[in-house]
Length: 194
Image: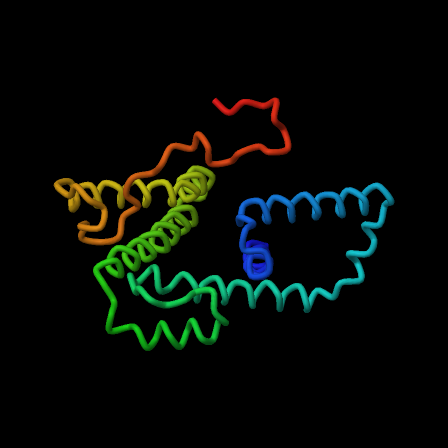
């Protein structure tokens, strides 16, 4: 859905450059919700049964490939690859830019390896000790949190003396602005954001 919304936002902004992306996305969400509500109220859910499973599977596979191809340049620290282009162009430009790989690749690839190793280890322990399989399953569900915390600590160790985010050894988020005015509510003037 995010890929489709992104394409719609890009297309609308070409015709109406004064509209911000968040307003377009919110409007699209409102329209989609209204359509789904209407279909639900008239009990038209049976229409979904006519969508072939093969087409849904193909769309999901294509979306997964497109999203994965768009994430690889960021994972490897490659700058200058336009991830909004067609998927084949993103893959070609990423392969052409492989010599520009930065230290970010070490962080990204080891984190990815850590996630898969963590899952494999928890599955192995769950099979080896079936009486504790549920415990290992819940430990496995926390793998993202553990890896994020580990790499936050690694980033802090490596970049603790860095004052400016652009001077960091690898790409970091930097200063995050406060969310006070991030989402203005033009349709509800009586609501105050605290």
